[in-house]
Amino acid sequence: MRQAQEARESIGASLFVAGVDEAGRGPLAGPLAVAAVILDPSRPIPGLDDSKKLSEAKREALYPLIIERALAWCVVLIEPDEIDRLNIFQATMTGMSRAVAGLAPGAHEALVDGNQLPKDLPCPGRAIVGGDALEPAISAASILAKVSRDRLMVAMENLHPGYGFAAHKGYPTPAHLAALQMLGPCAQHRRSFAPVRLLLDQARLF
Image (cartoon, rainbow, N blue to C red; front, side, top):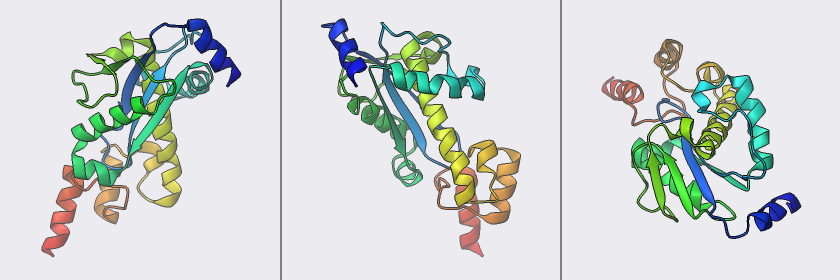
């Protein structure tokens, strides 16, 4: 805490710029993870990049560095029932707003990966297509979101065995689709996503 306070004092009146990104829009199961990060210019983190371009080992190595060196960070989870209620796009926008609002100190500007900005961001924002590979703060957010979600999906394997969540992290792989067909949806499946919805519709018919 003292280090973070000293860093904030050394930056003084500089603007706090948050990077914002998500992980888990495409899976059939599990939460959507959204992260916001304000990096400390005086404590650079070498190796930041789009989380999809990094190996799992590299992401895991960068995760604690981001947590330690960032001025502020926040990870928000949007659970499957809220995704189903809002739709995945609105759930993403909601998660981004919540993540930025959860930063302390707050951000003066948010750089959001993609081409859409949430309407209720608590600060001005800019949407940057491919930002997770261009802006270090967005790269850091993408890593926090990805690692946080992957760890949850690995833990979920024990709660819902048989689906292979630890391996495919909820994405619609052939193995996941086969398990879904055999076992049916569990509590972590997104009912509004087509493969899950079709199974539920079929079950209602018979």
